[in-house]
Image (cartoon, rainbow, N blue to C red):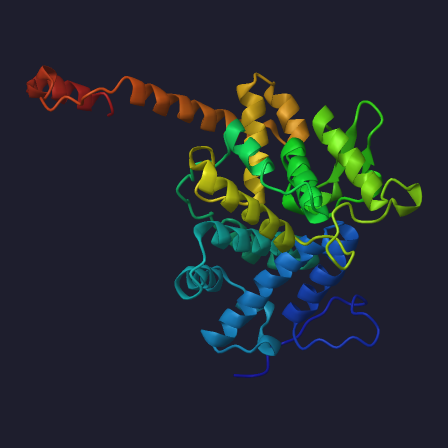
Length: 356
C-alpha cells in the first residue's frame, strides 16, 4: 500500500504547524480552535470530546493496528465507528449511556466536517444517520422531604468545615444546581438583598438567576461573613473553596455529598435512595416543586432546561409513582382464564383482516 494521500485546504494550515494526516489536521482545528473559539464550548465539553477521540485512536491502534499518525479521513467510516462503539461496551464495559455520549461527540465532529470537507458529504451523512442505541429507562432517584432534612442535619455546625458543608448542601438542593454549576460559583454570584438570588452558569456558559429560600439566604449570609467573602474585593473568590483555597472539584463535592448521605441513611433509610450523587439533589428539588403544584415552566427555568420536554420527565416520573402507589393500595389479580371471544374463530379471522 502506498502512503496515504494528505490533503489540506489551501491557506488554512497555521504557519509552522506540522500534521501527518488530514484527520490529525482537522481534529486539531476542531478541538483547538472551533469548539473553544467559535462555539464557546466550556473546557469540560472540550475535554469530553477530546477523551472520545483519544479512545477512538486507542481503538484504531489496538484493534485495527492503525497508529494515530496514519489515520486518515478515508478510514473514518460507519463500519469502523460501529465497531468502535461495540468495543467500548465489550472491552471497556461502557454503559449504553456512555456509548451514546461517545457517539454524540463523533456526530458533533462530523457535523463540523460537513462544512470543512464538503466533498465528503455522503460519507458524513452516512455517519450522522447512525442511530443511538436504545437503553432501558432508568427509574429516577430522589429524596423525600424527610430524606433531605435528614441529610441537612448531618453536618456539624460547631466546626467550620461542617458549616461550609451545610451551606453547600443547602444551596445544592435549594437551587437545583448541577454539580459543575455549584463548583463554579463565586462569592459575587450571591445577592442577599431581598429578594435573595444566586447566579448559576450552566451548559454552554448560559447564566440564570435562581431565587433563594429565606433559610438558605440566611445561612449564606452567615457563611459569607465568617469566610470574609462578603467583601466586594473578594467577589471573584470561589464560594466553596477547598483547603488550598481553590474551588472544590466535582469529585470533592461528590465526596462531601456521599459522606453525609451515608450518615443520614444509617438513621433514615426510608427517605434516601439506594444510589445518590449530587445530581439526585437536583432531581429531588424538581420533584418536590412539582408535587407542590409548581408549573413545569417555572421548574424548567429554575433548572436551566432549554426545552420544556426535558422537564416533563419529572411529571412522567411522578405519574409512575402514583400508579405504583395505587397498585399497591388496590392490588388486582390477573385472570388466568381465556376470554370467551378468543374461542370464536370467526371473530379472530375478522379482527386479523382489519390490518390488511
